[in-house]
Image (tube, rainbow over all chains, first blue to last red; front, side, top):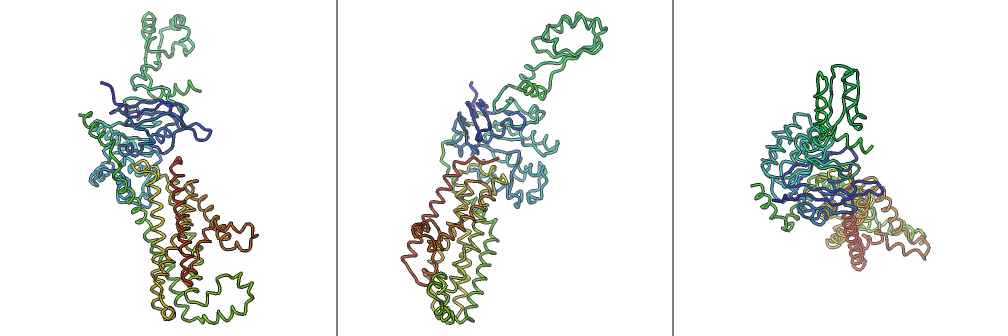
Length: 304
Length: 293
């Protein structure tokens, strides 16, 4: 059975005057998945999200959400979408309750106040305090309630946990995950916090200089990435003998220190290297899979 | 199960945006609730000023104004313009209250119009509002509707207090209470101030910046004042420039004192056109704009 594509972009480009926002961005996000859009500040994550929500207009290319053109059917799309920006702008002189009632009241479907109160209680948000009296973290909780309260098919979260403490962050992702499992909604999670994305995302897209450079599951990315091997040899001679047998492209990455060697290899080279090591006099060996952060940094190192 | 739920929700896709009017009025209501005290305070404030002016007229010898003006050279009286109507109680009130309403009320409405949209952009609340199923026309339209409600309510309170004060004043009762002239003046004031505010609103949709909109809005207001009021001192060949000034089409003395229906009808039509053109212009510009981050 083919997967339902919820978000699709083809060569989506947005320029702000002469400066690049995103360029030829190609993306397909499927129904029921949590898709992490990863990239550092200025990579084009927020531009992508804002173009999809029709807050800014594309320069060229195509983009569809729910098979609908993002500009001509923006209201239908937004009716089925919840959005939380990282830099949350709320009405400062109104209470959290008033903000939520007004903003959620813009949806066609009625969202009962009970649902808002329930979520506020879970996340420890005082609904009756004015937003200007709330801390940054508590303001962000208003954003979380805004995201989780409506029953929508798509959640677009742009750095949703900025300013939240680790406990509330974990609680948010737990609820997000549960809700997503229960409703089968799709989540586009834009972030530069790799450890967060790694925990919840089914697939990850790495965005660099306005374009997607890699899309894969977290596991695939890890498999594709280099593994680090650290070996402690019994003698310096054993180390020398081993390094002489290494393929030349690996030799370039070897760091030698008396009887210790460390180097990077691809998954395909793993069997050969372990064979070589089995014939060597070794005391200890450690094979490390990189964290998503290391993989991510690799993409940026390549660029620089 | 998930598939079924998705399909069920997808059924709404082709449905027309039936809740758009609900969202529109919800936005207007939110703004009214936010500014309700300002409306009462400002309308009441101008009304109180008007009450004092009306009360003051009882102690003034208006005939003496007429006598003084009769000694003034004709050229000087031309320069003073409408000042001669000071001898009439309605003329006195109109000159004191309505002729300069652009200064004490107009500037406030220009400030309000400038900040209504751009303040939301600067505070980033616009991102949350426009990420909900509300069209840009509805979003800006609700702000424009509120602006007119704000002007109508404020000026309405001011006019009601003025009318009450006049009804209680023996001077005005002797002159007669002209409800229909009052109503005409009310509409022209609303349209005149509406047009001034809409100039600022139009500028704010272009720049989406409160400071720029306010500065340009006030600057244009003063330029139009000079063009509309002092065009007679310009070279005859360029006097036609007066037609672009909103001030040229605001002549409260002609409505209230002279009951000039022709001037009133012309002014109402042209001020109406100014308002409609600026509303359409603002909506067109806003629809094309990127919302800055």
